[in-house]
Amino acid sequence: MPVRVQTGDFDAGREIASLRAGDRGVGAIAVFVGNVRDRNDDADVGRLTLEHYPGMTEAALEDIVAQAKRRFDIHDVLVIHRVGALAPGDQIVLVAVTGSHRGAAFDACEFTMDYLKTRAPFWKKERSKDGERWVEARASDDEAAARW
Amino acid sequence: MRDATETAVRLRLVYLARLREAFDSSGETLTLDQEAPTIDDVAGRLRARGGPWADELAPGRAVRFAVNHRLARRDDTVSDGDEVAIFPPVTGG
Image 1 (cartoon, one colour):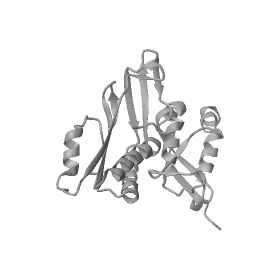
Image 2 (image 1 turned 120 degrees about the vertical axis):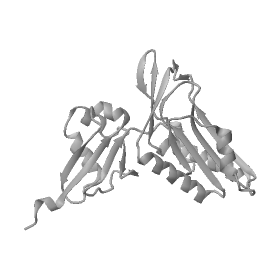
Image 3 (image 1 turned 180 degrees about the vertical axis):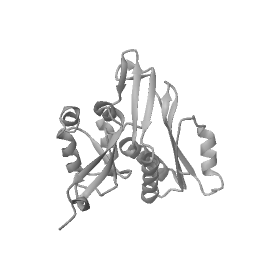
Image 4 (image 1 turned 45 degrees about the vertical axis):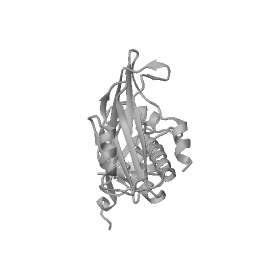
């Protein structure tokens, strides 16, 4: 499966090894891992809850992966995104791209993250000592996605 | 004489994240008696309820829509049996 939405953690090394297995033409693997920071907008984050839209989440990620494969000369893409309750330091998302050369692999990895940040139906809710609040989308994410 | 139910467009609405809390509802069925209603028509119908509906769906508010699990624009039409999700700008990754 090119995309997975799961509550459990992932082992990036193992996922990369699986992704590239059997493809001896792979010359480059570009990887992004996103983690929960301990601070956001000047407040300490105690817990992060990732909500998603079951049914659309996987479809949206698959669509982004399909676009990446059409636009960039790459071999394969893997996206894993966690949902549910997470703590500071936890891994949230993995994007791994294999290709013959690094340029397309880097670009496809960045494209996939920029599109995920603006199109994939996930929402973060932070809990701190001051209470709970929904994280706001950033204009910089829309600007990043618009570059492609 | 045309049967009025022929033009009924029954939608399954889904509210997500902060909007679910604002509307105090995770979803409902909505029936529109018009031909080829758009997402804008759906939003207008909900806005007319006043209260948090009018606030959250007011012009200029950042709201996103999906029809049958695909992002939709406000001028997209909806059909009988469609699932329409309404949610804030996404914040994954």
